[in-house]
Picture (cartoon, one colour):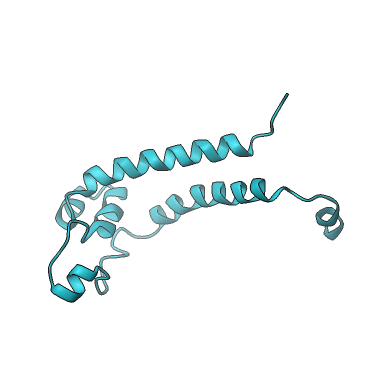
Length: 110
């Protein structure tokens, strides 16, 4: 096995693209495997909430996105109604990144 690695070196860019592709595939699966209420407990990390006790437009977004990914619409709306706008945008960004990574790892012909 060590002989294989010393004789064949994958170009760094291609290796990083493969790692990025694996991350893009594993991350959403991980979020779906976690329970919807995984991020519901704990202290807020928002500086606005911590220092001034004022919620910003992003407060509760992580919790809302997790509930929305698990199709728990009521709780997503409760935590942050903006998640219904953010999740489709994030989905499109994810698809663009995924498409680009798949194109970059495919062997070039010609």
